[in-house]
Length: 217
Image 1 (cartoon, rainbow, N blue to C red):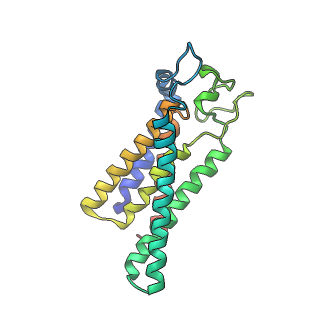
Image 2: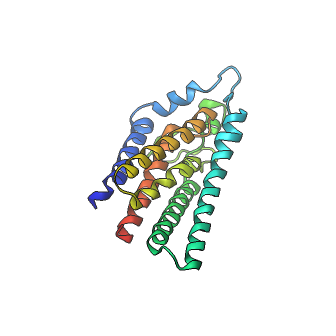
Image 3: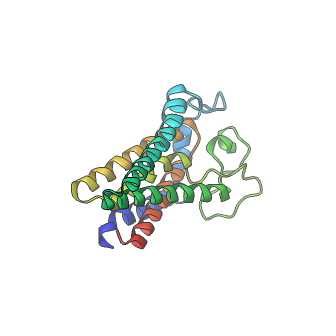
């Protein structure tokens, strides 16, 4: 279990930072306000081409293509009956990453927290409320916590249990950097608060840790 301490650390620290940003301080509101144009009553970068088409849609479809590429590689190896150890590693990455994305989207579907652009403070009609607080009468459409887009980056934490040494550390740094970029894009567009990104990282890391524990990786 000590081998996966980095995954547990990401899960715990991300959850604590989400609470700090959303519940213990006004970090979520302050950060969203940086990108909100009060005079226009909107987030100017919401439909900016680089952010919306490339760094949002592009990153999402890139993650899908990489996952499908790994699936194709696993299928070829299985048909040839070759590289059993590599097949096992690929299978773990495919399953754990998929379960991480599913978990995030299931949590999001049940969430009462709305995206910033639906919150009254930022031109919407929903009421902002903090993590662990009861849902207000007018919370808006909800279904925005945690961030599904950030999960397309954090899902690749599933690579960690099949790697060791420097490769594992570099992969961890790369995934966190990619997740930070994906999350920053959504915060700038008004699609998510920082806590939404952090809880996506926490849930993905927790799911991968559970999968690694069950698979005894």
